[in-house]
Length: 273
Image (cartoon, rainbow, N blue to C red):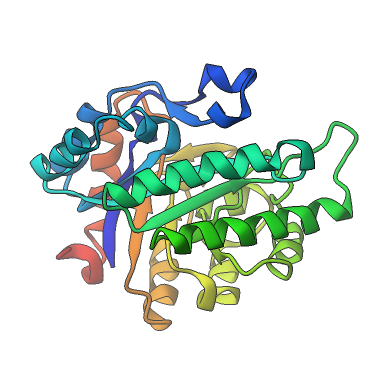
């Protein structure tokens, strides 16, 4: 397994303000320095990084500069995180166009993965048809990713219509996309990460780890998640891809990354990464 870290800790999770009035600009965004994030991630001992679509698109006219930054820090560009509502027909074309632009730039910059979150919750509740719409949209996202030689994976997330294990099971029957389990979001949604990993092991091409306790997302080892067993299960199914630590916010981002890297160093199979 190869270890990566998400740049979103540097600046925290916000949205692109232009997205309020323009769906094509509705990006995720971390309000911090990508340059600082990559330097800190490399110094903390990780091999690669994941980035939000909004932070990647800041380099749309400076691709070579971005690739140079990656090389300077001796990192691999693992992938980009994007998403959409996916259930509203009137804006779906705009959402998919945005995702295609992100995928094209990510591929040009050397990424391997396209990670997708989303599935809106209506103000009057979730409709069964929303899962059909979401599944169909994610199939198109998978095709977009394939067009640009990327691996697409769906990331269950609080605040979407795929929070609980039951909701995840409903969606996975309706789409061909791979699954990127985020262990903390799965637990926060009422699930058991180990069970989800076992159940969908044949559709897992990428993994997010973060710890969880009493409603808080934490560096690895500071909550109560059983990462030893999770990694054992992944090893048993011969998973040899990226494992990316993701932490939405931490007072000292580099310190948070170091805490998780130190915790992971106790596991022999990833100690020599």
